[in-house]
Length: 446
Picture 1: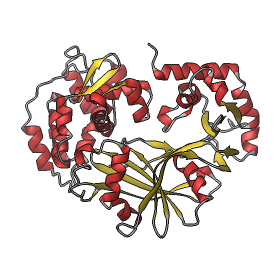
Picture 2: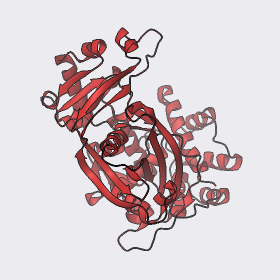
Picture 3: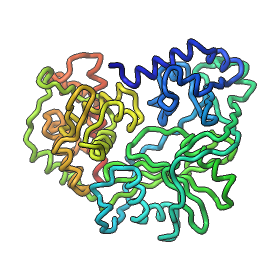
Picture 4: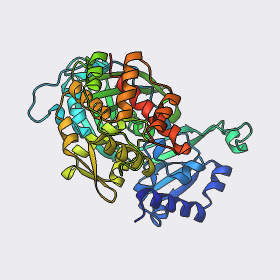
C-alpha cells in the first residue's frame, strides 16, 4: 500500500505535468490553481498543508515551490519563502511554574494541544511571558474561521547561485503580492486583556521551523477587526516544558517582515538535575544491549532530535488504544515519511514504543509508566533506558565526566569496535544522532 507521502508526491508530479505551473511561475511569478483541479488527483487539504519546511512535498521542494490558500476554493503557487526558523532552544533554563491541583488537568494528561494551552494559562505562565497581570488574559476565540479579504507581499526564495534569478524576480525585487479572500484558517488560542489581543499557535512537538502563514493569516484577520495591539505567540510544548516565542510583523502588509521579539521556557517544576544525578543513573544501570548488527529487528538510531522522540511518546499516549499509524505520526510531527520511520524506530530502540502491525505503532507499558513521573524522574528514566545500551553507557560516562560530547571520530570508532554499524555510507550519519542524543543528556544539567 502506497504511503501518504508517496501519494502526495505522485499527485503533485501529475499536477506539474498537466498544468504549466513552472513556466507560469517563471514568467509571471505566480500560478493560480483551483481546489477542484487539485482534487482531481488528491484531496487539496492533504496536498497543501505543509506546516514545516521538512513536510513540503518533494516535487515542490525540488523546484523551490510553495503553496498558499487564497480562498476556500483556490490556491497560489510560487517560489515563496514561507518558513521561519526557531532559535536554538537548548540554551535556555526553564522557569519553574506551578500547576494548580485540578482533578481534570494533571501533568500526566497534557498530551493534547488544547490541554497544554489550558495548563499554560491556569499556571500563569502565559501572563508572565507577556507581562500581563495574573488573570488579565481571557480566552475569547479559537477554532476554524475565514480570513476575510486582504492582500500582502511575500519574499521569494533567494537564488542559490549568482544570476540564477529570473528577470521577473529581479523586477519584483524578490517579492510578489498575493490577494486573499475568505480563505480558511484555524486558531489554537485567542485571548484578550485590557491592553492587547493575543493569538497563539500551539504545537506539542519541537520542530526546526514553522509556516509563517499560521501566525500571519490570523493576524491579518484580527488586525482589521480590533483596535488593541495584537500579540503573536508560538508555543512548542513537549516533555513537560513550554518553549514560548513572541513575534511581530514590522510591516503589516509584508508576510516576510516577521520578527522575533522574545522567547522563554517554562517547566512545571524545578528541573534541578545535576551531573551527579546523571552519573549515578548511568553507573547504576546494567548494560543489556550491545546493538551488534543483526542482533535485533530494530535498526540503530538515525534520528537527531531526541525531543521529537519524546513528543512521539506523548502523542501516542493521547491516541485511542495508545496506537497510531505512520501517516498519523507524520501528520502530527510535520515530517516526511522517511523521517517518521527514523523516529518510530528510535522510539522502539529506546524501549518505549512497539510496532504492532505494518505501519502501526503503540505506546508500551514502559513508555506509559514514564509519563506518570514528574519532570526530573522522567528525564532520569529516559537516561536509564539509554544507558542500557553499551555505546551510550560508555560514551555518557565520558561526556558527563568531561562535560563535552565525544567527537564523531570517537563515536564511530566505538561503533566499529562493537560491530554496530559497518556501512561507511551511514556510520557517520548515525554517529551524529548518537552525539545529538548525548548532547540532550548534557543539556539536562542546569
